[in-house]
Length: 345
Image (cartoon, rainbow, N blue to C red):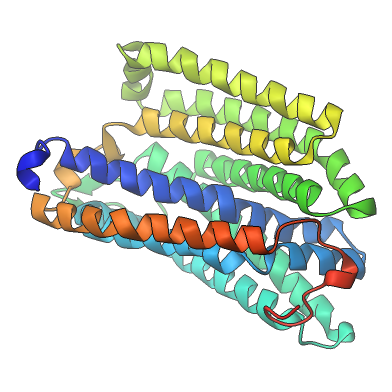
């Protein structure tokens, strides 16, 4: 099989696989985390029941993509895996603990007496907020650069902390809030849906402003970033991405005006995808800027081909399972259709 694929193409395929798994995770679990953060703006217990029930059947499948991304990074780019984890240990530990806390609260909340559910609600909201913020800070830390010498992390314990990384954390939280609001527009009705309709525009405008500001800021962090986007073919790709982002934003505005609930969610995901490709294009050809390129961090071609072959079956299987879950639990979530216990209708 290796003779059928050029050797210099294998690391790019591996990077594309890794990028795909991360993108799917952000799009799917980002909506779940956004719903959790919105608990702080939803004091009514019945509305919180509906919000939990809208994500309860699918949240664990969504997080499968995070596990797959971590495993793929270890197998495909081991030096990048060690460098990123060494640089971001505090963030990753806090993020994982937050996700565990949120998942436990989601599953056990339905079994608790109503008088005790406030504590679980705090765990869902706090865990979702902290996990989203940590993911954004981690992204900012990678974009600003990780100090690597001879494929080994050579920075300090707090190198990840900066004004740029904190701004990225706030931006990711805002993006997830947009996805969560659009999710509630699609999956709920009545007063809860009406509030989500009202929140979506100003959250979307805030997210766009933050993304544009951070994008401009990122170009000042590393001279190679701005130079990279000025060279062919990225100079053309830059304008294509800008046009696509504007088109996605206009679709978002149109969907809100025409009350197209599913289209609103798709428009938000479209904006996210364009922003994601902008980040990927900025970092290319590095996987850990400014020292580790995709080719330099890649494992042996035989190892990569083995993982790529396995993922050729695994990724479609997870997609099929996730699609089936969304199909089974399709439609508007109503209080009378609540999932009162973990997975039981």
